[in-house]
Image (cartoon, rainbow, N blue to C red):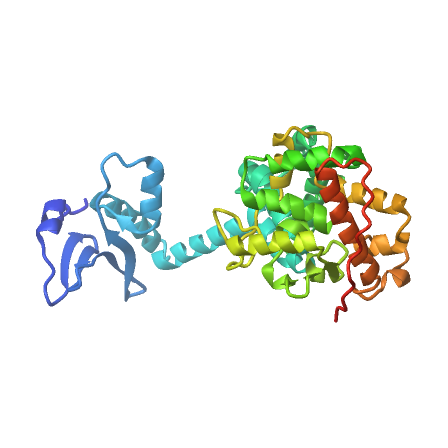
Length: 429
């Protein structure tokens, strides 16, 4: 028959710390060690093969009033035990000692197994794969993949062991994404393939199931609509009435003046600009084609940027995020702006580049090659695609100033205006 317990919460709470450690015994080798610094630690003294050992069980604490089962589990897992919980832990430890096992070794193994289980959850393996693959991707590519996983995948089975997932788990998710966004479903399937192939490589699954996933339909590609010349003026005038932020209006106007891609505009950094020379140099790692790109700024673009610099020039980005200024503005702001001013479905931020290209080409002033350099288009022939970033720079400078003057004329309502002003050329090193 077990001896009666000796401790009580009243005794524990009334015992104060003194210059020397104090031991309050409860029986069966369980005691509470009260140290001079005030810490109160549960200890279990036991013997195996005649050798004395001490098992550190945790720290004495009280359960908060109204504590939920989940909160209790977290508290106990962190090692904060009430008197009753310490006695339960002590009883389990005694059973282990009777079987010749050290409680500390059993606990260490349980923690190791838990760590392995966490590391081999779908989310653990996925994040490990993302880290490995991210060296090959641009930052925005990594963020796109992280957002998809965090929004659609991790909430469903991120915490489940990856080895337990079945094809139907992934297929059901793919089909639900496909109904909402076919292109995202295609990307999700690609991510699953990469993650499960990685899981097979590191031994988290015996065999990758991703190659046998359901085929998802690819959305029909809808090319961004181009505006007619007579629509440009009304559109830009409507942009000026936009009730959103000054930075968003400026980003839209800069997109029309510089004719770069949306991601290149919104992620632009002040370090890329030489306003004295009216030059914008975009590094290769921010360009879709992975090539440095030089944009000679028109006088209108320069004036726009000088005004913006007064507002955001002390930071890194031209268009900083309002919540976290270490990041740039969201990629969706120009789409939202277009929708809010009543042009939804009539034009997209991507469509303006095609609009400009068509109008410039029809003017007959510049060669197709010069315009391709201006818009940083890809070259089908890789040898032809290797070129100096400043190639055709004079023609590109002329074209962008001509284009900026044309936009001014169209905004003023001068239909069919012929812009005769051509800029002075400058040398760019």
